[in-house]
Structure formats: C-alpha cells, structure tokens
Amino acid sequence: MLPAVNECCPPQSPISRSVSVSVGYELFYRRALREGDWTAVYLPAGTNRHTRKGVSTGRWQLFDVARDPGETRDLAAAEPAWLAELVAAYDAYAKDKGVVPLPVAAVPTTGGAKP
Figure 1: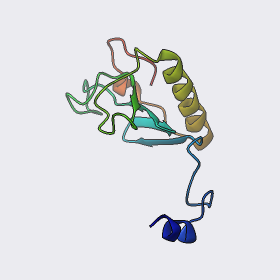
Figure 2: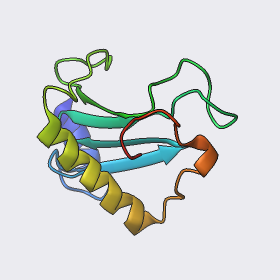
Figure 3: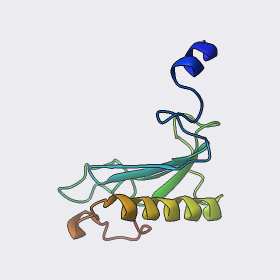
Figure 4: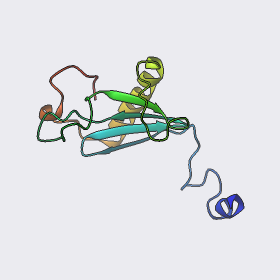
C-alpha cells in the first residue's frame, strides 16, 4: 500500500509532512501541538461558561502518542523540558497564525500553567 500512497502523495509533498515538523491547532479554547511522537495538549478547566466540567485541569499536558496513542498518561512532570519546548513552539505557532487568546473568563482561577 505504501507505493500507492507515495505515488499519490510523495514524501515531503505539500499534503504530507516530516515528523520533525510541528503542527499546532486550536478549537474552542482547546490547544495542542504535535511534533514527532509527542503531543502537548491544553484543555481549559471546566470552571466557567467557556468550558465543560470535568474536561481537564487547565494546564498543559504531554503525551508520547507512539507509546500511548490514547493519551492516557500525562508525562508533563517526567519531561518538563520537552513540554516547555513544545509549549514554546505552540506559542510561536499561535503568534504566527493569529490565534485568539483565551478570554479572561476561560482562564482557570486556581493555578495551572499559562495556556
């Protein structure tokens, strides 16, 4: 099947990407950045009208999706330097793409990292 995929979409074509390329996304105040096997995810805490209760703690989380495709084991405490690098990459992505900042009402009032 790979030859058919490469024929349709050769490696490094505009519709494929290298594993070293970061891909950021944001939707309804949820933020994430994927780079290689790693994903940094920010889901606002369910503390106000902008979020749902029980969705998250309102801090950045880090997942190794190669080993944990269901994103069930947060590695933020074990890999703080890697998380900081991915969050910095997300911040650059957000600035470059004009991502709308979180409204004050959506920012958690109890702790949590900068979204």
